[in-house]
Image 1 (cartoon, rainbow, N blue to C red):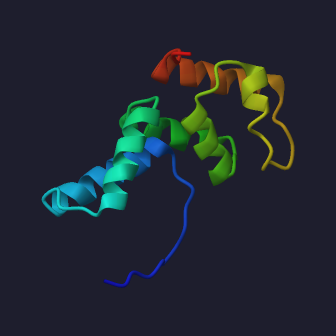
Image 2 (tube, rainbow, N blue to C red; image 1 turned 60 degrees about the vertical axis):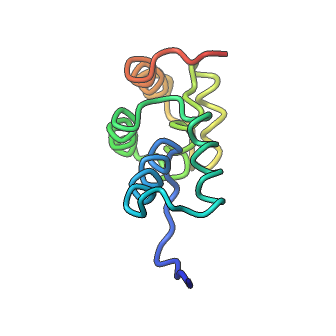
Image 3 (cartoon, helix red, strand yellow; image 1 turned 90 degrees about the vertical axis):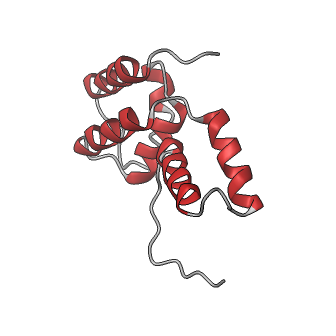
Length: 116
């Protein structure tokens, strides 16, 4: 079977997990070994509910973050402003302290504190 990439988007792990689960269900669970391994990996690394991630994704896009930055934020779930600041490498400039604090607060509210 030959596939063609029509477009590419950076998406958070939780969204990828949701898409792969839908794909697996559509095929009755009969997916390739690669898809199965990726789903197992995503089960281990997803740190936030996919519905919360989708809502946060839309909220973060309102701040003007690039797709790649938004996805990194939602994959890593930063707990501090300093941790969040390190994820701004693809942005033209680092947002002011209030924006960063709002982002961290939104993440903590929806995803809670991550386990270390």
